[in-house]
Amino acid sequence: MDEKTEIINSELSKDILKIYEPYFLMFPEYYRVFLDFINNIIYKDNNNSFSLQNKLFYGFMASSTIGCEYLLLDFEKIFLVLGGEKSWIEEGIKCKGIPDSIRGMANINNILAHKPWILDYRNFLTFSNCLNDFLFQSAIILTSIQRFASILCSLNFITQKDIGDEKKGKNNEEKIPDYKNISKTNENQKANKDYIYIDLSKKKRKIKDEDIEDEIQKVIISVKKSYQEKKEKEKRKENEESNENKEEEKKEEERKDINYKKDVFKKYISEFIISYNNFNPHIEKYLLAEDFNWNDNAKYFYFDYAGKEMEYLDKDLKALQNLSFENNNKDIKINIFELGNTIEKYLNLIFGIHDEDYNYHLTNESLPVVLKRIIKKVACFPDQILEQELESCLEVLSKKQLVYLIFMVASIKQKISLTYFANAFCDFNNKALKKNDIDN
Image (cartoon, rainbow, N blue to C red; front, side, top):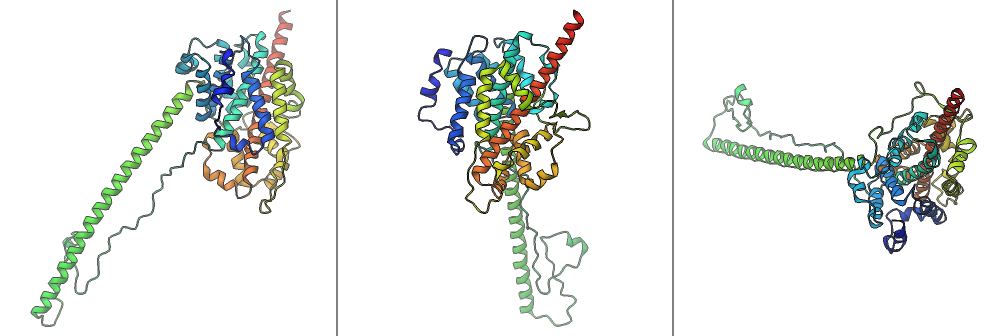
């Protein structure tokens, strides 16, 4: 499979503009760094213990747990062109041909994507100590693809219009004309809307033949009108029922499509965790930033165990962080590039990393509610973001700022997941050392 790696650049990418590239090309310098990062951690430096086929299978796992169909299909195409085992795609993580070490990362993959704060030493008990490098390489690859998938989902590249259940208001109440000298005199006749009764008995005047004919003609006209209205009402009802049936059929097809996608995704991910739940500080412990954080602790674990991968990742994260541009739109008052630290601390709080210096009230002053919502969705529910939500963000941000915000949030989320991974591994090592001391 490694011998055919060059096909990726020559055949798969020849004259083909990826559907996400126009957004990335808003920041061409960063895009080059990002592509270099992805190419290096997946397509280069492959060995027998961590082959290209294994890494591409991580692509299935990571994009599936985020729910990004576009990226999943892209990895599948590359996987098959490069001669990957078709059974891996057909059977998913249950395929016997997949190495136990790759399959063993399924639970960790889901935890890193959705609930990184629950990672602890027990998640590493099924792996031997000699796989330390493998674990950290895996964490970088999985979270990097998760980040990529989150970006694609957040920008709604594959547009899905939100179909609500609200029905338009209807004003189809039947109005009975108020004809002169036309009334209902019998309670039993009130229930019969097709019958209009003329009561002339109250009239004290002498009725002429032409008056009677005139009244009869009025009754005939009224009955015809009532009949026509009834028929029209029945026809409208039939049309509404037909439309409702079509709508139900359409929704059923959508449900089938969604269920099909879920079945496809489930092939590559563990069923242990497949959704995000809010961190609850009242029942779960915070990870204190003073005790363990990305800059002082976590990333150095990755340099120790996955030096090359960490070098590429570090360069990518710094390139994104250093981006800036002048805002020429005077209506846009928020400079999202100056709020990186605020957004990072806000996300840390959401995922349970507590910084004593963080003032949440300042976040409320800096970020409108619409941006706080999109930040949380990009980090937690990227596959559920709607076009309307992105459009509402464009009222306070330029399009370029919004794209940058999505890139930044996805990157911060990756750092959070990797921090929890390193912290759990640190605990695992400490417990192993204590056990060895006791045994000795």
